[in-house]
Image (spheres, one colour):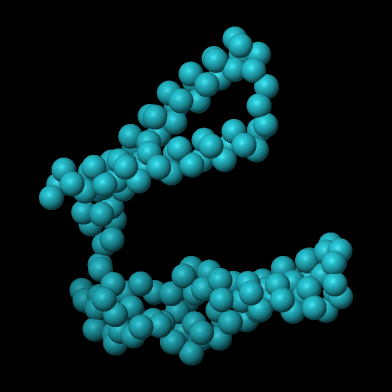
Length: 156
């Protein structure tokens, strides 16, 4: 049996998963993106305090529109219809590096949170929760980046 998507033409925009072509994908992505951006703009116009409401709406709607359009596109595009897409991205070497780094980082997070919880409990130290989470998040991202580079270097 042949795969119907294997012989289909590929483009930089792709085609919709739900059976439509490129035009359907673009139209649906734009409509959903406009709805998301308008909702965010309306929410900010309603809760914002500075300036006029229509200006707040317009600024937020315009600024969030590109991301609001790309999100539904990413969810609705048929990957096999994109030029240069690989067939099974989960089998790539980068995916293995990512998995190795994520596994090691998870172990580090468990150890760090456990030791931190014990230290804060025993010493009765009080810290700003927001600052603590920012520091912890930054440490996790740095740990993941270092582990990813080490996995990449080990396979090179």
